[in-house]
Image 1 (spheres, rainbow, N blue to C red):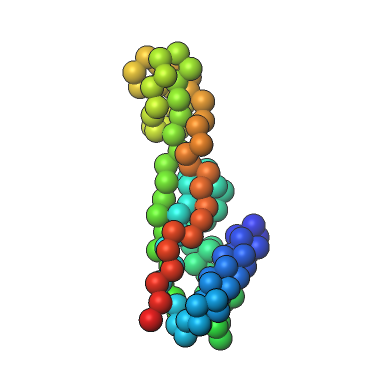
Image 2 (image 1 turned 60 degrees about the vertical axis):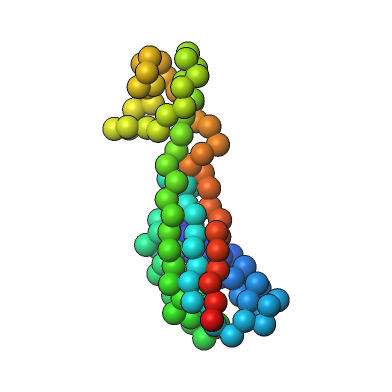
Length: 113
């Protein structure tokens, strides 16, 4: 159910921007989601369809850009993406820690008619 409240906020933001600019029809919304954000794009898609009914965003295409999480090796400083659910650095084998990449959730763009 987490996606319901997040999607409600998303729809509210899209509608607010459309109203500010007197937009009659939103055709596409591009959303960035980090793999560690804990959000499922399929659920967001479903809830967006329901919540945007009878609004200028009804029927808008949602495009999702997925951002992979990145880690920094505490030993050698290498920045890497996780492979096979391991947090070990591919260069030296030491354990990496999460950097601020992979927790994103934001609207990148809104396309209109």
